[in-house]
Amino acid sequence: MSLFGFSLRPRLPKSAQTAKDRLQILLAHERRDGSDGPDYLPMLQSDILAVIRKYVQIKQEDVDIRMERNDDISSLEINIEIPSPEQEAPARLRSRAKG
Amino acid sequence: MSLFGFSLRPRLPKSAQTAKDRLQILLAHERRDGSDGPDYLPMLQSDILAVIRKYVQIKQEDVDIRMERNDDISSLEINIEIPSPEQEAPARLRSRAKG
Image (cartoon, rainbow over all chains, first blue to last red; front, side, top):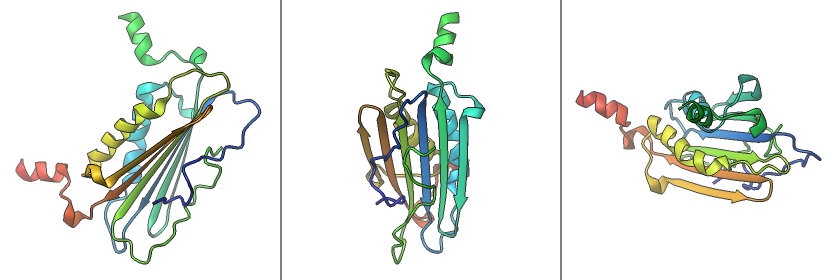
């Protein structure tokens, strides 16, 4: 069952040098015929970003969000460039350092 | 920048009748060359399911999870069948009903 109509194996255009870690999240919500249920994606968007921020500090400019909706499908794409550890001291480690 | 090498528009094999809402979440984490940073996906998996459960009651048997990892990319696919409202009284509504 793949809403994105492809297998899990991401086909990555291998950039010669990957400078940063990248995280991509794709969500698709297919509504059953005649369903007027809620559109979960706008609600999930901020929560998922909050979950990611639990593990890694990300700046707003490193986050790219695209959302699309048609009659029966809504889709949300979140692309995040993750600073390398040298550029980032996760909040948890810093707070431990202060503790 | 698409780790999944395709545009956001999900190509959905339109089943004649869509009986249930479906939610698909795909995560890909590309690690920069030489990076030995943490693999975020196992950590994100349970948190993302917890976020979804804030909005809709899902049974474990309605959740299908696949994870793959190679040298520079980990990917996680979560497929969820969402019961129709008639089959589901979201916890929040029920707790409000009790309130």
